[in-house]
Image (tube, rainbow, N blue to C red; front, side, top):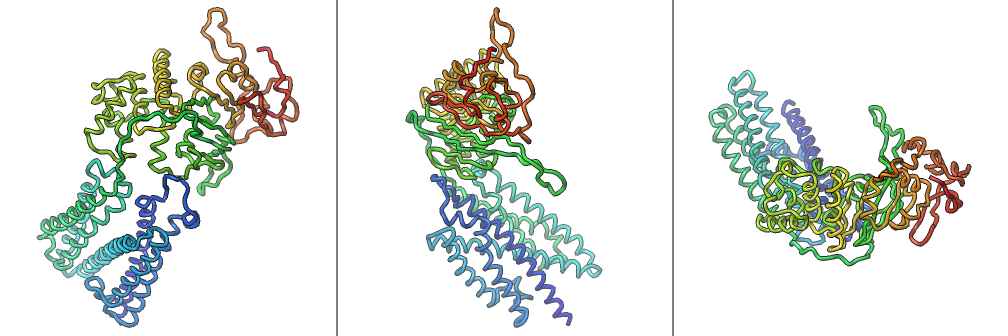
Length: 592
């Protein structure tokens, strides 16, 4: 009875170990799908099969047969043979051999169905995963066996507690040293799945240490140093092999010369974009509302064109930029890059195409990194270039593009002025030959004279390479200087769009008129601001019904329809549109 109970306990333990290995297997296969195979191609759109099966669902399907077969093996061994349960840690029984063979066959079929069409690659992949699973399970079994030996020896051997402490400390040391070694080096940051291959290097060393403890549980303390060194050498050796193998998977890309783009091609299209930030309340994080930061915005940008977004603070300009960059999730709408819809997760090719210049250069530059490392960072992370000579040559060319010199390469950000820092940020944005650059208030923190230098630099770069710019700003003078077309935003919506000349010489929407009239002028004769809008901007949590501008509207054409109907698109002239309820606003005149 005691023997049967012990076997039953072992069976329960093995089931728990199998569940843990099953969950780890799901994480590993999902990481394989996400990071190694990378289903996001340059075509951006996933296949019909990838749309039907999410990475998590595919991972569960691939791992489920192994889990079920292993449980059947445990049950079979419990009823028909105790050898598998008692000696399964140290030897492989017939049942386990059958399970391994069946798993390879089923796993290969499922891998070929979901991931790899090539038979050889599928077999190699499933064998690697089988080795990882059994390695994890073997260590967990050995670890449980060590604990059983220790607890059963308490009161019999006093040294066993000291030996167990030495064993546990050795586990931590081996794990720590191997982890440090795995993450040491510049190239390892290019391997996105490094954290998933770490156990492959650590577990063999931990298995070796556990076996040495079980062989001599009483005298382990005296041999701790030797056992730890042997186990650490095993882990470091495997870590070296795995790192070298992983480096071969880095997608190195050749540096291309900065070639001018074809002008007037549609680069970016934003269609009916909506981004709402949820308002959560309570412990259960129940959603009680949403901040409608962007609520149905559409525009496009062509190569060689600068599209300016202007509006009050909080109207949603930066949220649009973050949505285009994939840094916030959109609730509705579509974003197309070169006529191809952008996926939820961006590939390195998309990251290479879209770059951003942030508002505050001090906040976007790492104070602990030299300029050469800051500018070369996208070359390392996106293009996989690690050769120092190639990086220095490229960074020097980029610095020359933004009117900086060779001696600036090895300085830190605090050694530069505000304008020079912004030039560094622009150089970093140009590093991977982008096509679309988003500039979020790039001159707001700079002096007026420095602003002019940065703006002229941007115009020169655009004239040379035909970049598309999305320029976000509050400063109407700046947008008048650099933009080709302008979109005016109010409370998450675009209310007027047109060319620079149309917006500044013939503003039509009441908000656009008020915005232009409220700007300050540098003039001895006219020191007064001609017009100030009354009232406050409504809350984006609960915008007013009808036209969102109706509580502040001052026009003669204002009526009750403005409080009920949603604004619609009205053509003022070719390329010039407003969103308003009443077309009579086109005839309205207001003396500012």
